[in-house]
Image (cartoon, rainbow, N blue to C red; front, side, top):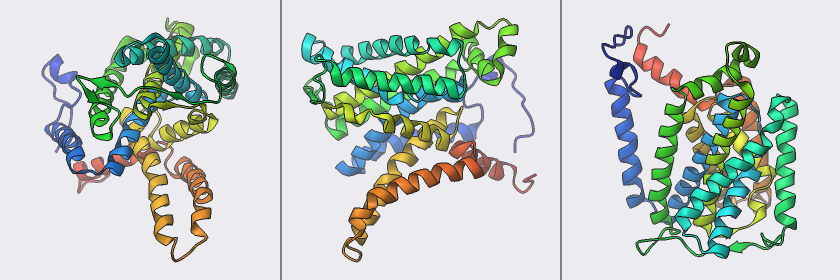
Length: 346
């Protein structure tokens, strides 16, 4: 049982997983992730790929909202920038898909930094409205621009790597998993640096942070750009995975869904972003399967499922906000603490 912190070196003190049990859990998760696609069917792999993409986007949003305290309702718009940038670079300029994904991330980061300019004067609800305006502006621009094809969908050639079609579920899983691991490592280490600590200081009390010498405006813009980079990555990956890019995938409903992901998973938690993405991806799938199973018994169930999904979606957010505002990450932390401290639960 742990009874204190007894690190004897800086290397041990800076370790991400300092205890043997933490390292064992991490190894088990990685082994499960590697073994999973060999036993999963196409439907399960599709859900897993959706979770991987959603997790990357949720971590990006959590960097901004959970760690820096800047509310954003423009997630769908920034994902659209990443998706359309990647698709257009491939279609119009013949850029390799992997380079188009990287450039899409950079473009989205620049756009996100631009729309982060109001954060110098705005905060809270006012900043949320400003980011909502960004969502509407981006959506309007995509529909009206002849470059994007308007309401018509863009069709992208399947991404190939050494002749392997990465748009297939099994192949894309490995790409998504590698990029998610890289995103997690970046995010976890970011908040062990000066920049990450500045983000957290701004979230906790921006005036005090400024008094202490933190350039609040600079770090807010950096938070918007960093967050948008990973949001753009999720959008670009979605474009390459689906090979069809349509504006209706990136509406305000998408922004609200991602905000729900980090609320349910846990604000200010990298692992919570993944928990929330898993929960919010599997919940509609479970409800749909239940509706299909009851369709023969209750014929009206098929028509009710879309409304049930929205009701459960809203009810879930309300219940988490009331009973566990820190989300699934806090629940998992409490479970670990219970077994770690048992029988001295106090």
